[in-house]
Image 1 (spheres, rainbow, N blue to C red):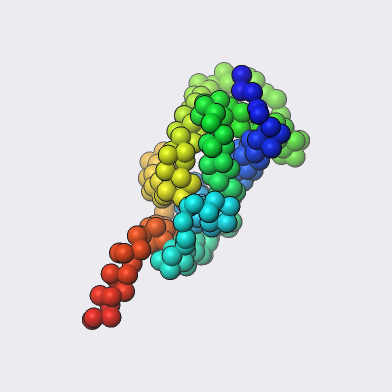
Image 2: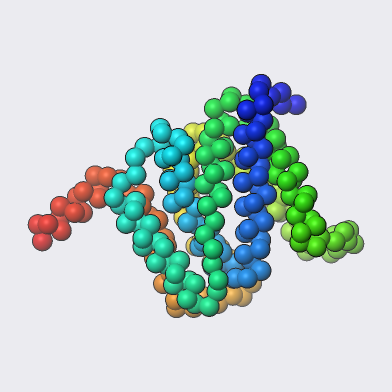
Length: 238
């Protein structure tokens, strides 16, 4: 069991469950019904931008935002627009940034990572119950007789949820919310390749160009200050 020292800490766990599990997963799965998995993967990768802004506001120790960061944001948003022009409707999802900041706060409580993640998931599932009625959920346990469905649930529950969230929360404690979010940059690459191989989706020219711009913009936003200044200086000399 995880004894909570105060109601303020309990509310932090509840907020993390609401943002990182309930709202984030609902929005992502709804997005998958309107767009290809590869495009959704790119939109998810924009999370580090929101994480940096949110962390700057609520976590002062995360550091200041540099000019390269804002330049990268502009390039990434242009890439998002190109993906939208390819025929799909997109929405930015800043929810994950709040979860990252909240998980950083939870890490300062001194609880076990596994216990803290389990408590967060408890609230995520609790807040998910009302959505069962909103999205016309139907009980049908016979579907689990199909091995493919059962394997998908097992993978999403153990791999994409339990293992991923525990390792993510551990990384946030060590590296911080902004540095850890950098690894989300690989999400659109992995998602695009996987969607082509497994779902046989096709990436259009605009979508491909948008993916490159998003990745390039996000990487630029995380460049070290000295490299950015060197680049500006070299341009002046030219």
